[in-house]
Amino acid sequence: MVAVLLLLAGGTATGCGGRATTHHKPGTSHEQASGDVGTLLATQDGTGHRLRQVPAQGAPEVRLTTRPDSEDGWNLQLVVKNFRFTPDSAGGAALPGAGHAHLELDGRKLARVYGPWYHLPAAQVPEGAHTLTVRLYTDDHTVWAVGGKAVEATAELTGGPPGQGSHSHAAPTPTAPPQTPQASPPTPRGSEAPDADRTVTVVVRDGKVVPAPGRVAVKRGERVALRVTSDRADTLHVHGYDKEIALPAGQEATLILTADRTGLFEVETHESDLVLTQLLVR
Image (cartoon, rainbow, N blue to C red; front, side, top):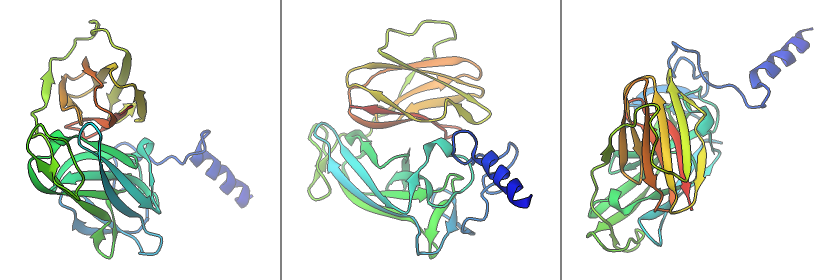
């Protein structure tokens, strides 16, 4: 009888889709729902996230490589070991060898990364020498750590004068200076957005993103409409395109952009720091 009950409990936990349910209950913090994976340290990384220490054997590992993009910036590859990217369970409990990464330039966060490839536009790298860092996080936003140190990797980039092509860290890497994100006025609910080839509709409610964050494949040159409704005032931001739009509480807002850059671009909210989707432009 005990064995049968255990089997039934296990089936309930995984659900019909077979994937374990990791999201914590409303009203509990990430740390309260993180379970007993590793040891939660008092030490924090530079962005205020606590370290979650695990034994060195079988611990997540990451290596960062940079390759110049033929048109703009760099294509970054995160080579991971004992780790898998889990964008659909971000915000849930810490599970062994799962989570996402943060990308930083000289200690300044650029984006969350939910896959092995990320396109870094030249416009985000000012002129001069810089250190690029990727750090691995759990789904509950604590940092994977070994021996009291965060699991991370770095690479050197050199930004150059505007108007020149980009190169890898092995040679000077000209780039354009940072651009101020372009804010767009919100589109009131019920109004028609300009013609678009692709429309992505997202709803944010109680800190949850519906549908769950994933990737949207887009052909280069297509016009994409991002229609977002949030239950709290926030700001929508498209990394790599430096596009922003205000999200009034309870009102749908639409951001239109032309996908004229290839790569993987993250769409997120600023205040709640939620990833809404990723645009994969080819």
